[in-house]
Length: 96
Image 1 (tube, rainbow, N blue to C red):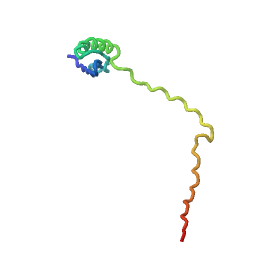
Image 2: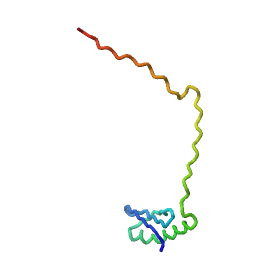
Image 3: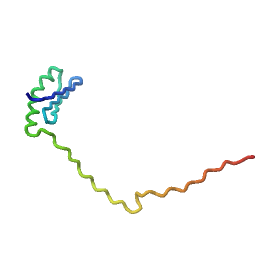
Image 4: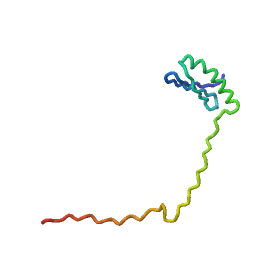
């Protein structure tokens, strides 16, 4: 017997139905209707998922695009400025 997982998330009259089998990535499809209509569409979704899994059981791995080259910083631009000299605290006047 095949190991399958079916997940249905319903909100109002819409649902997201996901199926996953064995060592495959899940196949997700949006479906509209009440619970009976949604459940009636699960076999067709499962057949579409099986057809996809036959050629590509896993989704492609994410390939991060290369970082764009950083522009050269002209000399003296973008460097920290030296801290301003600390000002002495004002002294309180004595009236005595």
